[in-house]
Image 1 (cartoon, helix red, strand yellow):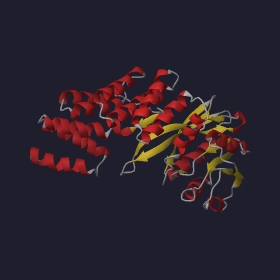
Image 2 (spheres, rainbow, N blue to C red):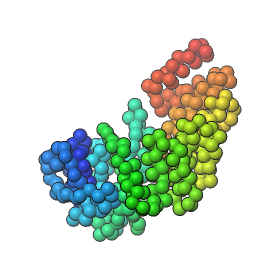
Image 3 (tube, rainbow, N blue to C red):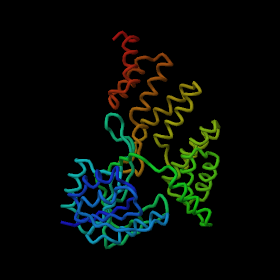
Length: 356
């Protein structure tokens, strides 16, 4: 059986670190915690577990801190987590089974990173991450902010999921780091252009965000998935600025990088729906249901090809007084969200309309 070192970087994580370690402590052979300057009870909490605690002076560079944490590992494989991540019981069982069966020639194991769930507990948004890596390969983290692990070789795609469960977030941290990089004269990489634009957008600095999204897309060096997301995010910026034509163009620009994604179809459907152009809206929402997402696609938001287009089609067909078809779409939406108030209201409405 292979051995696993858990490597984490932390700072002021007293609210979540205990929950994280409790979910993983029995599945790893070593826990390395790198503290970058906690002033709360983080250090006291982690010392309640069998951990190796290290200090690292924070230099506003996440990759540097993560690479230092990886350097402390002594086992066959390295697993990395953030303090606000957890392994749910089902995924604990899967990781235990993987550890018992993992062949030593595997260089990395990718896992789902579940970012959000609905009120029913169903995962609605997740991405794929290379989460477990062979130590002797000495893979490196890259990037001061929104760092990524550069991995190559033989990669195993697992069905294990890490669940992201944040309780709070320092909304200014990443933007401040990027501002310092720019002020120091550092040239932003294509990846950094994209993530800096995201930070500007999240701070409602829409005009500036659009400039950096355009710079990112025009360099033609970005990952195509980031390019698609940049188009969608740029559309959100134009929407906030009430520039509908530019918003539409940004959505359509995503078609350059791949076949229309369900999210793009839903965005176009909503655009026409707002304009009361019902037939066009129906076309795009139906397209969202026809597009098949790749099972291990790196970014997935399931609402765009499950309940959302069905709920919108329900409204659209109701506008056209095609009540049977509208009711069918509402019932399908209910199969995904059985307790949604809007869907239940529609159900009562159609019972009256159709005399059921």
